[in-house]
Length: 94
Image 1 (cartoon, rainbow, N blue to C red):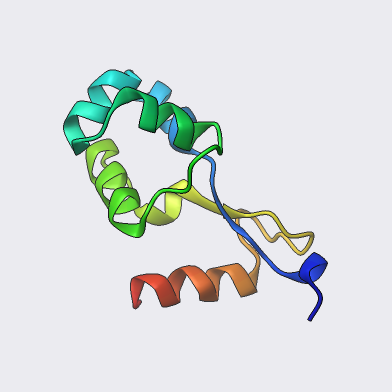
Image 2 (cartoon, rainbow, N blue to C red):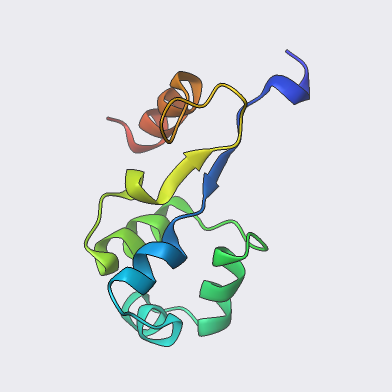
């Protein structure tokens, strides 16, 4: 499989969900034990969070980790294509 066909899992909904819940980057950072700049870098795709951080963010925002994830492939079906869903489920052992 060439690299252009591979799915990449993105964390893209953190900012949207955080703002809908009226939680600042600073407050979210304090809740999960990281700096505000770490939250900013994650939201701007400049840093990839660990699965542990994704779980902590989801807990702090009171959402499922899947709500924070999507894929960047061209086979999108709603938020994630089937291949990305398998990757995400594999990472979370679901």
